[in-house]
Amino acid sequence: MKHHLDFEKPLIELHQKLDELRRAQQANPLGLQLEDDIRGIEAKLSETRRQIYANLTAWQRVQVARHPHRPYFLDYVRLIFTEFLELHGDRLYADDHAMVGGFARLAGHRVMVIGTQKGRDTKENILRNFGSAHPEGYRKALRLMRLADRFGLPVITLIDTAGAFPGVAAEERHIAEAIAVNLREMMRLEVPVIAAVIGEGGSGGALGIGVADRVLILENAYYSVISPEGCASILWKDRKATPVAAEALRITGRDLLEFGLVDEVIPEPLGGAHHDPAATAAALKACLVRHLAELLGLARDERLKRRYEKFRAMGHFTVKGRTLPDATAVTAEASSAPESAGG
Image (tube, rainbow, N blue to C red; front, side, top):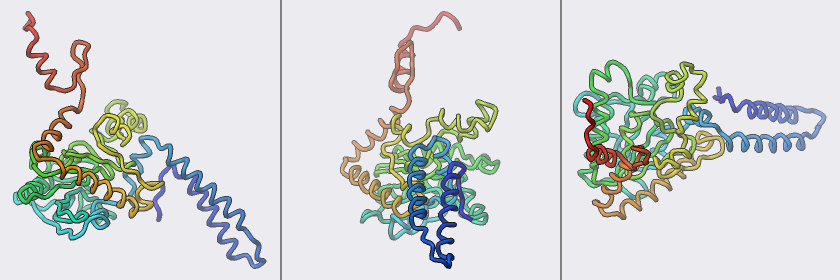
């Protein structure tokens, strides 16, 4: 059965009316013509769809990002890359099926592509752990990145996860340490790194493969330190405040671009990526190829310098009424200030 979102109800009703008219026209033994009515409903359907999707709220975009028919990592690998060869295991514990990666070609360039993969049904979701990787997933990703670095292959990561797995087993195997090491080591990779958020970009689970020279995001994807539901539960003590939390978090592509947290927002077909996966993949591929060409044109030292400055500039701090650009300035300010008389 086709999955519909709450705000798509007007479209569902118009679709049902259109189907009824078409069935009536086909079954009418008197040859009654209904073309004018059908064309009118089709025009209204097109205009209603345009109005709905041109004015999506932050929470509605989150719902689109979670749509079960939305293309996942392996769908984009099939549509964008060629000669994909999956590599398995972290060489320390196990092979995490929520984190997938391997060698591939992108428009003639040999690359290492890595991403989080969700499942389409219950069986696959259990296999993929609903796209939430364990520590071994992040260690596998780092192993593949280091392999790419050794052979001079650009790294491309596609992010679609609600977050790293928060269970006891993940804590026992040091999930926070695994993600922290990835943050540090991705900053040091000497090859070009591009990350694209294709669906959900949840917290450290997303950031664990998201430190890159260029960070891209699809129009209806989101990137956030916490889910809107989690934020509503903590701040409002009520999950009914989820839409308000989504707006307050500023997690949509447009907001993230404004804050300088992403480098480009990639348009999706009207209605979301699941309405035309091929067109979405073509737009994502064109964007990846363009940014990769730009990064390959930079000297290694310049690329590393820009990557460092990119993440160092994220966030602003106010000290004594002045807005400072980063933590370095705050540290300098604090170190130069005279010590207070108190303990």
